[in-house]
Image 1: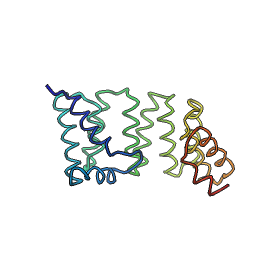
Image 2: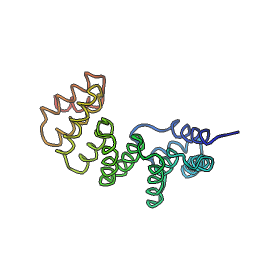
Image 3: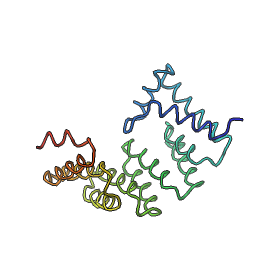
Length: 202
């Protein structure tokens, strides 16, 4: 007998086959459509699988959250997110997933609100702090972004991408010397995101 987890895994597999970090939902579903024939059909198939998982397990928080990320209707999306959090109110990954989704949509205020909620529960989460920093930066709140990213780096200094972010924040402020130092640190740790930045300034 196929379980809720089976359908959830199938939906994620469908996504993961084509999902690349940082691309938009539109780009993702265009890629997904290559084997489904139509982007809307592909999206509906993923939604169907998540809904099937929820039908079999009405308390499947991750399925609600992922379904929310696919909703065109903003009210439905917010309702799915809140449902997920009502089931598992203390889940760091859910707050990251929801906050990052709003960040991708350019809804910095909602992104920051959800990261705030997560950080209240997980004040030592380098992940939530670093992505709230991105949301602050996108909202032109560079000082707040630097406070968060500095905390995140102190919590886990091994994450190369956080030095890339901090370098970008320094660049945003006009402090190119500090930005270069961080991009070089990112490169030292094996990151490549700052390569073009170093070529531009060095």
